Image 1 (cartoon, rainbow, N blue to C red):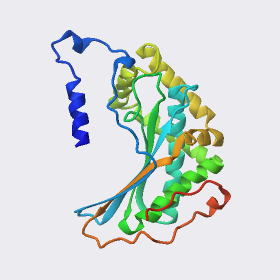
Image 2: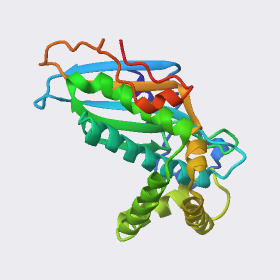
Image 3: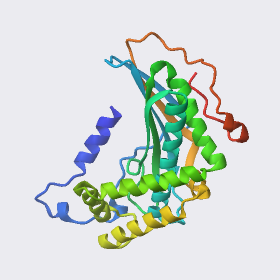
Image 4: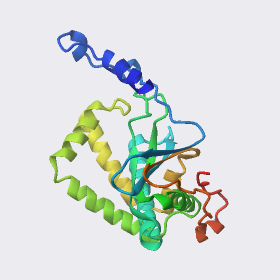
Amino acid sequence: GRLQRLVEKWLASIPPAATPEANRRREPAELTPLGVRFPRGVTHKRLSLPMIDAGSSTQLTWRFTFDASRHEYLQTHELSLASKVLEMRLMQRLRFETSAVYQTSVRLDLGTYSAPDPSTPFEGTLIVSFSSDATRAASSVELAGGELQLLLCEGATEADLTSARQISAREHEDATQTNQYWLSRLAHAVSSGRVEGAAEDRFRVWEELRLRALADLSAQTVKRALGRLDMQNFTVVTLVPSTLPPICTNATAIVHESLLRCVAPPIEPHA
């Protein structure tokens, strides 16, 4: 299929190890992206597979594009902090208040859609994942979208910001105790062709801007970072056990009371 053709194209572009071409450093403009593009519009997919566990897994994905006038590293750190705020809000709302999900997480994908050429806009995706009972997947999607809309409308609370700072600092401290963290940071500094400068300069700038984003974290920076998300183009994929009976997805919408203060429309559940 299409994925196989992309993999074959990538493998065919790798020169033999014994040739001079294999060791030549290429400029970003010389590299050809695989051509993977984020779907346009709103895409809902519900997949049924034989599973031992009766639970379901759902993933919501939004595309984002960075502002070309601001440093790529700074925007990465700002969006990472905003994603921590969103994750905490989802954990509180979906797990502790409504018991709708078993667990939830928010992460960034910075490599799938972005071209190596720094003259092109940097693209990535924000991914929300959660596991739940299959009968509650559709309503949980709406609740997750509602929390994101709420942050876009009102920004984060001071309690959200304090928790995000503490979690970010603790996670960074723990990560720096592992070899994997330093290896990944060095590999990123060496291979990143979108940011100018030597590897050691990129490494230093990454850390400086991480501390700057942490110090400047506010309700406005959270809104600005999440404002880069393309809310008109997103995907919802749910994996459910095929052994369960058909699930009615025309359930009554669960509306977050705070959304009444927002003018942005909430995400519609899959019909």
